[in-house]
Image (cartoon, rainbow, N blue to C red):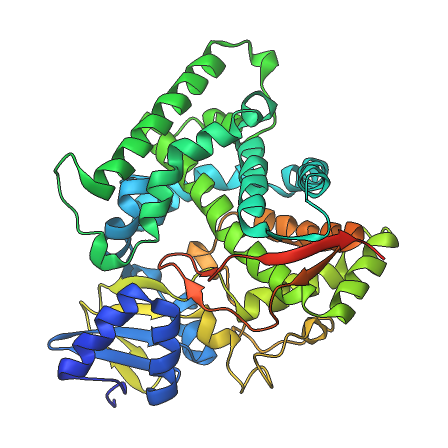
Length: 426
């Protein structure tokens, strides 16, 4: 076994600090110096980043009992999602919670959400100011949040989506602070306490809704996710709250980031925009080209640059040995921008995805296996309809053709938002 290439000593300390504060840029810089799989060597332990698709496959499909998620995720996510969230669970607890939540995202429900997504997008488009520059990012965020709340809670709480967003905003903002500013403490002040208070405020709202539903007649049950979770009859009150918050956070923050990149890249290419429009005008329900546009945007701009876990048992990773106690992270950013898999990788070309012939594990923005994103179907449907509906109804001219930088630690948003000039379709 050979040592994984990467910095040691002071260079490793600097690299670890940079990775915690600006992960996307740091991962690419280190990959350029050491290769697409590298390690930040910190004495007896290391941070291993895996960006070669063959090795990503080993991480995602190998024995998952050799990893732990809780010790890695509870620092940045625990204050928001809670201690029983699937995102910070391990072993049997994770398997049980996932099995209880997964049926709520069945295909039949997914297809039933299409109309409400289109309605919300049309409402956003109707309110866009014409012939002037506007930042679409906050409008996309509000719209996607309303969609997610409607999907989770049904029509009764849909009108309160903005209130729910305001309650959770301090916690959501806290997650994307640099890791150095997320030091745990018990004191009742500062950004961490605002995040805790944010979560308590949302829990009060959620508890009232749960009590209302449990007191209602069974005939009043809806087809939203909350009713599906209540019917699962296996989640404690704490687990129920934590899963709902996790689904909201994963549902709108990551999707908003992905939608922002999608609009910036698609609108900057007149040919792409025209093909999206022609497909939408043709009423092709499959949206094959729109799906390819989404696929290409997620390839270059995944919502998260890396997905970490703790190594609980030493294992072989190709020619390397990863030691117990190390942190390991597979990177959809590196696999998606690997020229060995994607010639001219930063070129935005949706046609790459039209024939279905893609290198295995070169496109993994949602992960794979038992830890894959549970809501990936809803996210892809949201993004596909964002692309096709905007292209069908308006023309967008980005303020710049330059690809912006990335801001955020857990979720990567474009620096400066989505500044575009909106005009009526020609």
